[in-house]
Length: 429
Image 1 (cartoon, rainbow, N blue to C red):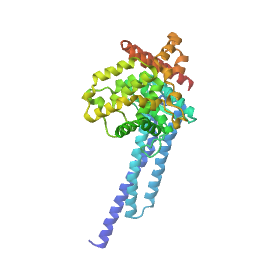
Image 2: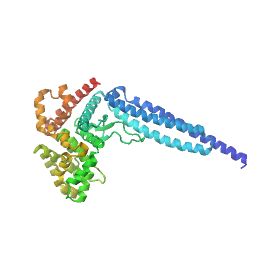
Image 3: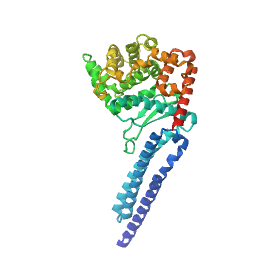
Image 4: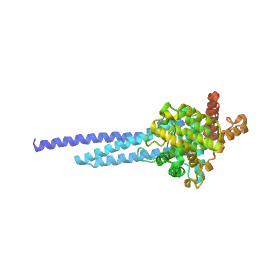
């Protein structure tokens, strides 16, 4: 091939490469521009169902992520416009590939938050979530304000599945940014038994205060003398035990029985022990909740719960290793309760969790006294609903556990007053 022919082929390759790169830049640049439309897929009513400061914070964070992506698009196009040689075009093509990846990460981020907001599109669901937002703020604020720590904006949302979870404020997100709010995922099947909300709030408090790390050391100290391997296994569960203790402190037996209903399984499922899983073995987790009740409330319906678990799930049916762990940990449960609720923590300014959040306020006796004092208005009065929404959840959970023949009516009361609470916050917005 002559020199002239080779030059012609090279020129055609360069033109083709330039066209290919330009087309991809146009596509992903346009996609980045159209990310603004994502926000509109959640209705104004859905956005309005968020507390104002939460919505403002979230929209600000989403705008920042989109603007960062647009700035990167400008840089990629500038590189393309300046490219003169094939080698420079190939480098731009690499930058386009990276930009495509960044777009997809940002799209995932935006879609996650906007989908959570879209869950509020149904008016009744939106009001229920407003109620959950209020309760989440109350329990986190109740702990953090004692420590003079700012309370993060919190958004709740419902989705399918078996268990709740949280994306804590400051979590590193898909696009590399930090979550501007705490987003708590609750499940549809459990939306009127909202003690899992308090568990997830416990994770948020722990993340801000450093409680998990301090608590793991407290467990090691309290369990001194037990087999080292067992102590380390229990310490590895510190984050989940802490969140369970937080939920118990705010809702008492309701948190224990709701957890029991979620983690109950068939046969050996309740003895499953997965390497690296921060969740305790389900069997132990339920008995630990029972031990919390015994430590603070004495004898009660939780004793029947423990007996039913022991009958349904004989330890002899557990796999060998998890059975060994269960047998070793059961005698340690009182000490684990002491570590979780009755040990002074430097991260709590020398207080115990029980001093910060008194479990006696949600004892069966205290809840029944609140019900007696309020009379028939406890689930309809704006005063009681606004001021005692967290303890009303504890009361509903207690009644649901101890009055199963009235279960449907109990949950209907919870649904109704949550909608009333949502209406109260909507009027105040």
